[in-house]
Length: 166
Ligand SMILES: Cc1cc2nc3c(=O)[nH]c(=O)nc-3n(C[C@H](O)[C@H](O)[C@H](O)COP(=O)(O)O)c2cc1C
Image (tube, rainbow, N blue to C red):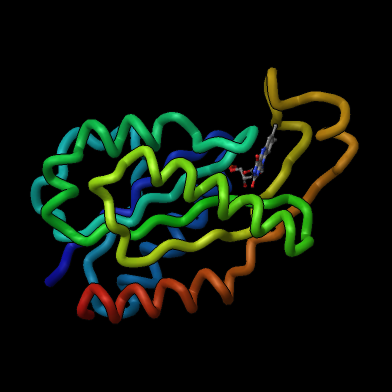
C-alpha cells in the first residue's frame, strides 16, 4: 500500500490543519497517510509519495518548505510529489491568482521538481495569534478570516488519491 507523507510548512497552524484533513481523506481512500511538520521530517524512508503544504507570507513561501525540498531532494526525485499553497485571506479572484503566482515562483526555484498536482486553498487569519513582523495594524484590522474550503480540499485530495493509485 502506498504510504503518503503530508508535510506542512505552517506558521500559525492552518496549513497544518489542512494537512491533517488531507491525510485523513487519503486514509479514507485506502492509502496509508500521515501529516507532519516539515521541520520534524528526518528522512523519507518508507514513504512512496509526498504532499507538501506551504503557507504563503509576504509573496513568498514559508522558508522551511524550501529547506525541506533541498534537504530531501534525492528521495523526492524518486516519488510523486503534490503541492498545495495557502493562501489568500481576501476572497477575490485576483488574490487567488496572486497566491498561485507566489506558489509557482517558489516552485521555479526547484527546477527538478515536477509536481503531479498543485493547488491553492484559501487561508485563515487569527489576528490575536500573530507575532512580529506579521502583526501590523493593517493585518489586525482585517479581523478573523477563514477561507478554507473543505469541500475543495476534499475534492483535490480525492483526485490525488486516484493519481497515487488508491
Ligand atoms: C503577515 C501576513 C502576510 C501574508 N502574506 C500572504 C501572501 O503574500 N500571499 C498569500 O496568499 N497569503 C498571505 N497571507 C495569508 C496566509 O498565507 C494565511 O493566513 C495562511 O492560512 C497562513 O498559514 P498558517 O496558519 O499555516 O501559517 C499572509 C498572512 C499574514 C498574517
